[in-house]
Image 1: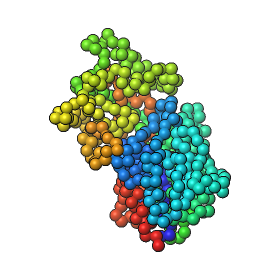
Image 2: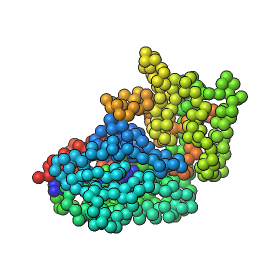
Image 3: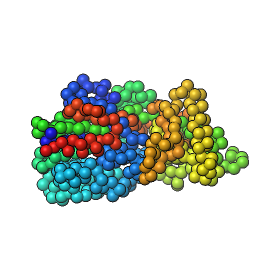
Image 4: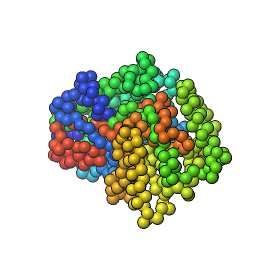
Length: 475
């Protein structure tokens, strides 16, 4: 092997690829001549912690970056990760220390750029800014660099067709630019990553999936997701042409993608009913303003969703003070009187956790945690074991890492369910945001190689060492 090219595609789903290999010639050839396998993400499978784990070869509890972005929040474009926490610790930095030249294009969240042994080209994510490169003259030598980083506008129902067209165009422009840079630079390790697949599936899933309860029928966008997979099948083949005959390609994704939950489990309400969570409404809740604000919030959401006008929630939300606390029901929760609650850990998806109050005495901690897990198991049984796939202490994901602490109890719901925080509601309710954001993350992304894997790689954390091991074989 003379060169290794790594292609990252955010949100590329193993199950979806496997089901459409008849349309995906490049992936089919990888499966026949090399390997095409599922690649497990971190917990929860969100892009930011998963890509940082790929870059550094460490779990989120060790690298400490567990941020996620809620596209439904108005200020999501002000989000910023502290890049200095993983800069100079990535697989391309390790390759450079080995004396291997690198060519890195559009690495997620790796902005601003830093010095590498070769070149690095990056752009801002969720924030405004200009493309950057090391060395700086790279952008002068390749002036047709498209906007990098992954900034995404939130499309409306009316603007979705244009959003699809622009998303396809963004991917094609980045692929053409990357091919030109890879052909013009000297490198041993090339790395290019794309983020259009994830964002398109988030907004277009229900238009492409007849099994989605909110599938609108024929709209002209029913092939949008598959078309983008077909496009990336061509892009992978296009970039592979930059390799010499003895070069190798590694295709990876940070997580999978599928239908987002259509129902939610109101776990704070369940904890309230069991006595673990205390509301702040006093002895007679119906006499409390907080109680009626919470009830009114949920009634308004339900009514607007029923008539297909849930978009008004986001218009009205601009004028509601402290709306984050209202959304998570924090305005009506008494943390001081509670022993456990559901934190805003992984958003409204099937992955979540329960936080035990730090005020709980240490000698009571294990018994309390065990009691809550037992209660959730009983709740699961009441729904024919179709709510939780599993519920467990955080120990497995926490490991020895101290940079980030998981909630004391972690769980995964079945994919049709997500987490909600509301109080004074039924235990199961509708996901009122599903029509706006109908695609969601899944555990298993893809690892495709031009060589047969032996032994196969199963987890995103292992990618770092796989890359370094392959580079060590270059003479």
